[in-house]
Structure formats: structure tokens, C-alpha cells
Length: 328
Image (tube, rainbow, N blue to C red):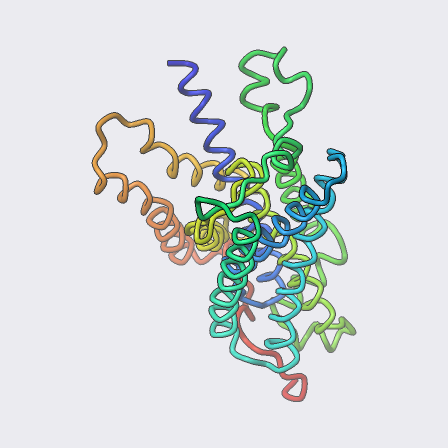
């Protein structure tokens, strides 16, 4: 019984980590006043960029160096997802395109890129199954802390994960600190609340929007990389990412735009995602109901926060609204 509980906790954390990366990145973006519905596509691009980097390194013939095996896909993932954020910024900040439409188009575009290049890599290896296995690189990503095995249940619950789990938590805590305790965070929140006033105060609105969106996209892309390299044991298959990108956006609302709260929320969402597996004789319909629960919980939180109407629990006032400096 205890071992089952420990396993459920571990699986919940692992399921929740991609959501934590995605929600943290989206919170930074939304704090600048931009609603980026392209997060699912960006996470997809982050995943395939890392997979491509790892694939060519594994097949280069060189002896695998664990550090380089981690570094190459990590850099590729950050660059690929940041470029997607840059494209979104160019369209919505510079060209002032509709944010909702642009985000949805970016999701379709990102999934298409992932499936195209993923399919191309699958053809290169002439695999009998429609997937790529990067097991050597995955081992480097999944390596737990060396002393975890000697600490019993504490090591199993808190120290038995790959390094990206801890990176996700650190980024969320650091993002929360920057947003609430630094001048940069104050300026970013000012841009999201009232870009006209921020502009009049001498804050470079365009710069903050670009930086927040590109950095947020890069962070979200790491969620896709984690899913493939750690959770899926280095196996890439087209359309295998599921609805985790949309769950990340739902988690932003659930956490009321606070990265620190996303840490707990991601584990809760992960728990709701994996718990049907451990319920004996569960029907397909009941399993689908469990998969709906994160969205139901998010809707309830959204209703409650709207009714309470507390300023600190509301989205940025200028979220989704284009900024025209000439109208200031």
C-alpha cells in the first residue's frame, strides 16, 4: 500500500512537470499583457528541437558524453521554442495581429513542425514502429541524485527525479521572486496592467513584451523536452504529447497567475491525470471523467476568483489588448 502511494506521488510529479514549465512560461508572458494560446505548439517545437539535437548527436558516431548529451538537446529546445515566441511577438507586438488568432495559429503551426520533422527522423532510422528511441540521451536526463536510494521514502518522494524536475521548481520560485520583489518584475507587471502609463513613465513596453514572451516560450519549450526525454524515456512519436499544452494554460488560471502556486497545482493536475491508472476495473468513461477534472477544477477556481473580485487574483488588466502608442 505504501509503495503504491509513493509510486502515485512520483508519477504525479512527473506528469505535472511539463505543466509547470508551460504554466510558468505562460504566466511570464501574460504578465506582459499577452495571451499566448500558442503554448501547446511551442512545447511541441521545444520537444522536437531537443529530439533533433539528441538524434544527430547519438548518431554522430562519437562516444556519448553525458554532459554534452544533455547540453545539445537543452540548447536546441531553448532556441526552437524561443524562436516561436519571437515569431508570436513579431506578429502581435510589431504587427499588432489579434493575439487569440495568432496563438491558435501558432499551436497548429508548432504541432505541424513537430510532426513533419518527427516523421522525417523516423524515416531516417527506418523504424518498424512510428517512433524514435533516444534511450542513451534519456538515461542522462533521468539520472536521479546519487544519494536518493539511501534515504528511504524521503529519497523516493523528493530526490528520485531527473534534474529538469528541480529546474522547473527553481524557475517557478525564481519567477515568483522576480515578479514580486524586483524592479524588473514591477515594470513587467506595470506593462501588463497599463502599458500606456508604463510607457509614459519611461518603461520600454515593446522590450518588456518581447523579452517576457520569448523567455516564457523558452521555459514552456522545456516542458516538451522533459516529457520526451524523461517521462517518455526518450521516445518520440507524432501526436504523442496529448493535451498537456492546454492543461498548462488551464494551470495558469488555477494558480491565479502565481508561479509559486503552480508548483502545487501542477502536482494536483498530475495526480488527477494518473490516478485512474491505479483504480481497479475502471471503465473508459470513468477514466475520461478523471481527465476532465483539471478543467473542471480550473473552472471552479475561475468562478470563485471572479466572484471575490480581489485584484491580486485577477489577470493583468491589459491582457489580450493590443497597445497602440499613438492612442496613449
